[in-house]
Length: 187
Image (cartoon, rainbow, N blue to C red; front, side):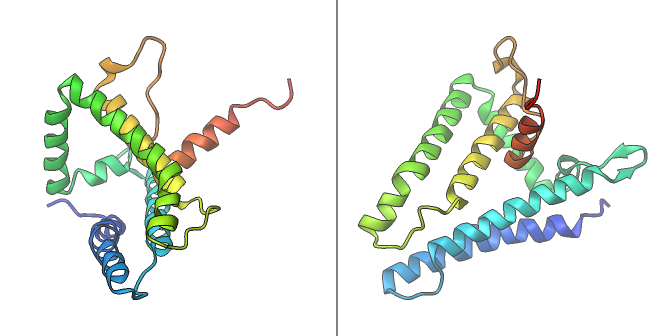
């Protein structure tokens, strides 16, 4: 039997139970009953921390070598049969070019809505305090676009235009850091 990494189990539990179910339910309940169980900013902060923890775990796994092969997050996630089955369903669904293009356009629109319209909707319609300086929704949005692009690039490389290179990593911070490191300051 494959031994599952306890950090991955914890992060999956946190992502699904807390960020996916409990916090949204508490936020809706708080809004409906004018209570203060959890705020939108706290939920966004929790999601951001979870994503950063995944990035740290991914990096720390790559530095470990088992049987002469680096351990990757992708390899560790394959130990979860439910995630493998979900991946098979996604690949089957996205095997149609129309659905792949629709997914990518939808994610770009979600990014646009989160960055531009969400702050206005939260403040004006729902009356929630939303910090305009908060980078949480922006970070989560860019991470979502990065995940989708990485996934589509790696499973459907035929969609890449000539000269385009697939993303090497799904993590936004790593993409930014490698991009910044390639910039030559002095010629």
